[in-house]
Amino acid sequence: MLNSFFKQNKRVKIAGLASLLLLMLSITGCSVKAPRQAAIASAHPLATQAGFEILQQGGNVYDAAVAVSAALAVVEPSGSGLGGGGFWLLHRESDDLDIMIDGREKAPLAAHKTMFLDTTGMADKQLSLNGVLAAGIPGMPAGLVHLSEKYGKLPLAVSLQPAIRYAEQGFQIDARHQKLLGFRQAILNQHPETAAIFLDNGQIPEKNSLLQQSDLAQTLKQIAAKGHAGFYQGSIADKLVNAVQQDGGIWTLKDLRKYQIVERQPITGRYKDIKITSAALPSSGGTVLVESLNILENIDLQAVDNITRKHLIVEAMRRAYHDRALYLGDADFVNVPSERLINKHYALGLSSTIRTDKAIPSDYLTGQIQEKQGGRNTTHFSIIDNQGNRVAATLSINFPFGAGLVAEGTGVLLNNEMDDFVSAKNSGNGYGLVGGDANAIAPEKRMLSSMTPTFLQDNQRIAVLGTPGGSRIISMVLLATLDFAAGHSPESWVNVKRFHHQYIPDQILYEKHGLSAEEITGLQALGHQLKPYYNYGNMQAVQLDKANNTLSAASDPRGEGQASVQQINE
Ligand code: GLY
Image (cartoon, rainbow, N blue to C red):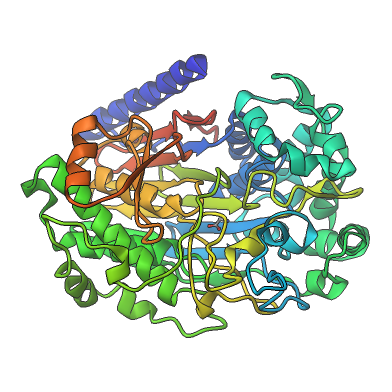
């Protein structure tokens, strides 16, 4: 990892020197065409390399995004996959297009509001987290096909090649993969098909051992050859539905045939001179991010001491996550007061309820029952070229290794995204997030997400960022946005020490060693409960500095990803 850190920094410096040379030439009046360059940051070196491989073959950033997404599905099966879904936020410079491809999973047609309740009316977390009932209808394959066909230059069969190769030839598993296997080992062992792929006689394989996924390679080839129908119809669809039904699940061929992505207008907002473009519903990410920033815009964070600053950020998070719980769900099914929630006047009202000298308990906003926190999950990658074309994609199968079940003969690991619905009012999801009827289960509805693929733009810089981390995704992107606003680099955003408040539970979750003893005491004195947590998140960020046409990239030091800037051959 240290080796790749030096390698990537060298690349950043080389790219910077090239830009400086161009700047000097243009000052001296020489006309030169800027060489094409791109920056990619993803959670796995092989995924970053897949993106550059496709750019070098003449692909654009959207083809590269297809390659990175599919590669992550193979080399980071804990985070995302063909059996999951996600959001791809795109910007196309030629026509200034901003659009979000919503490839979120949908509830099956036979799903219903009470499907995860036990006989006493309590939510049965085993059902919504583990096994076939936990799986929504996947959106990832449809997202890849759409991204390639509508925005790419290369055939899907080309963009999927690196992923197919990684699945066929295998790759060496790293320590992070081992750790996440450990988190779900018992569940994986309940399903022989899954254990045969990911475990070694039920045990976690040695570090650097080769993981080959020949069935997954065949499924990718079907998608490469037949597009949407390669996954949602024909032999793969048959195998998926058979596997699910044999295990007592409710998917049908009609569910798969009907699945379509939706193109949505991203959420936009402003924080001081920064334009924010982020995920629309059914992700709460953009709404909660913009609402938090709108609240904070009314507060001079530079004028207060460090402890008060953290306290005020927490109070903004508390209020925005409160609205998440109250109002947010799939807007194709329920009325959501989105415009109000991201309105500056509304935020002014909320900020007036914040006190600098005292935490306001979440109960005072309205009461909800608290639940436990969840684990690591999901993945994110960021791509930008030096024209400003860009993709921020956050993709997920929810918990590590999703529902823990591979549909026999497909290599497709099923998601457990149904847990992101609200099953019962008295119960949070796997991340302790509470909610209301707006996010209740209904056939074909998309479950509320926290994924927050985001662009930030001021008059000099364009940033592309995002991270996994369940409910904590939004607060991580918020802290990184404040760091961007302070003028810092991608390296700094991904390193920011993290703290989080999601309204319920009423506590500040903070990275171990992320707060000093003095900060902890100071926040406690203001009335906050604090809970240390392991280092969380895996942020991937890239930036174009338009002033000197320089790209930079950074991958979260907590993960094993790779960020790189490279020149692309014309
Ligand atoms: N499954 C995590 C999310 O969508 O927020």
